[in-house]
Length: 473
Image (cartoon, rainbow, N blue to C red):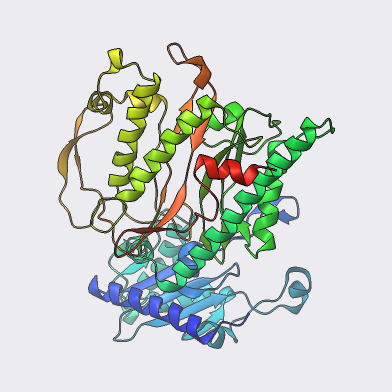
C-alpha cells in the first residue's frame, strides 16, 4: 500500500488530537486493536472488515493490527504492531505491509511485529498513570490488558509504576468521529452518489422485467434479482462492500423492518421497499426508497406515500444547526399522525387530535422506529444522542412514566444523520383494508451545514411522480 502525504497528515492529525484529549483528561496511554478475522466455515473466513476506530486513526486495513498512543509527554507518540512479512503466506493471502515499512507508509513513530505485542506492551504501560482502551467492543481485550498490567505490577520493586486507572477510549473517539472533516464528507458524498445510482438501477430493472412479463415472456422478478442489481452497481463504481445487508422487500414484506432480500416474487400492483447502501473507503451510505414494482402507484399506495414524503420534508426543514437531534423525529411524527387520522388508519372518534395520539402513542401501530440515526464509518455510527455536559431533566417515557433524561444532542455543522420516516400497515381490525400490507419508508443521508442540511443521496428520485417517470418505459 502507499498512502498519499495529505492522507498521512490527516491520520497524524487525528492521533495528535487524541493525544491532546488524553492529556486534557489526565494523561496516559491508549491501546486500540483492529478487528480480528472471523471464520465462516472450514478453511474459509468472512470477508474481512477493519475496526472503524482503528482505521479512523491509521488508515490501515490489514488484520492483526494494534495501535498504541502515548500521551505522557509533550508530544504524542504512536506505535503500530502489525503482521510481519511472510513470503509464504503472502503467496496465499496477499501482500503484507510489515513493521519495517509501516512508519514511512502510515506516519507512525515506530512499528513492531504483532508477535512481539505481549513482550512490548508491559514496557509501554510502565510508568503510565492511566490506560485507555475501547470497552465492550473486542472480546477478551479486558483480560489481555489485565495480563499486561499484572506483568507491570510484578516489576514494581524494580521501580516500575502501574497505571492506576482504566478508561473507555470510545468516549473520546466518539466525540471526534461525530463531526466529520472535509475528507470524510467527500467520501460520504461519493458513497451516496453510488448508492443512489444503485437504487435507480433497481427501479428500472423492476419496471423492465415486469414489462416483459406483461407481454407474455416467462420472466419472474424476485427480490434477490434486485439485490444483485444493487451489488453490481456498488462494485462497478468501486465500493468495497454493502454497508449492511440489503433490504429488498416486496409487498407485505415491506412491513418487516429488518427483512432481508429473499425469493419473494414481485407482482404488478405491489410496492417494493429497498433499504440499501454501499460502503466506500470505510464510510457508509444509507438510502431507502419505496416504489411500485411496475412503475405506477395505486391510489391507496399514493395516498400513504405522499404522507411519508411530507413527513420527511418536515423533518428536513428542521435539520439545521441549533436544533436538537430529536426535532426531525418530532416534526415527522406529527405529519404522520395527521395523515393517519385523515386516512382512517386511526379513527378520530377514538383517538382524538394529533396531540392526543402523541400522548397515547397509538401511532406506534404504524410507525414504530425513530426518524434517524448518526451515520459515518458505521451505518449506525457512534456518538452520544444527548448533549454532553447537560443536566438530566424529568420527562415522560413511552409508558408515561416520569424518568430523568439528558436533553437531546444539539445539531452542529459536520454531523451526518439519516432522515427516514415510514408507515407500515399490517392487517388488523378497524384498519381500512385497501391499506393492508402497504409498507413505505423514505430515507436520505443529511449533512448538517452552516445554514441547514445537504441531502447527499438525492441522486435517486423521491417524489412519486418522479419515480413513476423514471420507471416509465
